[in-house]
Amino acid sequence: MIFGAELPRRAVFLCLLAAASPVHAQSAWGLTQLMQSLAQTRAATGNFTEREISPVLSAPLVSTGTLTYVAPNYVRKVTNSPAPEVFILDHDQVTLTSPTSDGTRVFALNQDPRIAGLVVGIRATLAGDLPALEQYYAVGLTGNAASWQLHLAPKDASLQRFLRAITIGGAQGQITIIDTASTDGSESLMSITAADVQNAP
Image 1 (cartoon, rainbow, N blue to C red):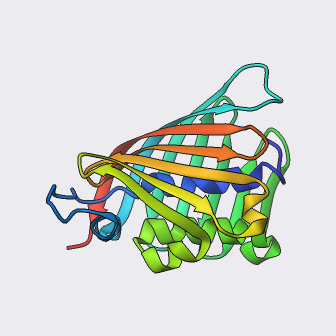
Image 2: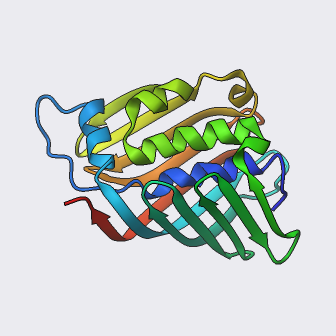
């Protein structure tokens, strides 16, 4: 993996673990009810499979690994295949470890406003904080409680330069797919299988 231009896409995985208690189908179900459900997750672990396509790749790149989320400020993505890599976000500090390339890098989010804006928006999704999310993204919702899609379009010009849109899909209160489209023609489709979810009492 290349550190730098590729890094913002890594941050997108933070949305993966926003699994929560079921959203009950009802006539009034909508964005508010979905965000309330996402806010119930206190901790979660899961497995992921990510398929990346890019104009610079001759074939799709498929990676697998595990994810851990502890509300509200800790996320860890461990990639096992095809090459080991660990991404940790702990409050406002990022630690990226890649034994096959650059070793370990540690830096603060405010060192790159683009990454900070992206991560803050994703944190808002994990927390079910719609007002904070809408500071960075135009938010839309389609489907119903049994099969929904959350559409995020970046508002900030610095995000718009590399990120076209994020679509998060799920069933009831569990996220199952995240599709990230970049302005350079790259796309990442990540499927998630929850292993353990702890909800607020």
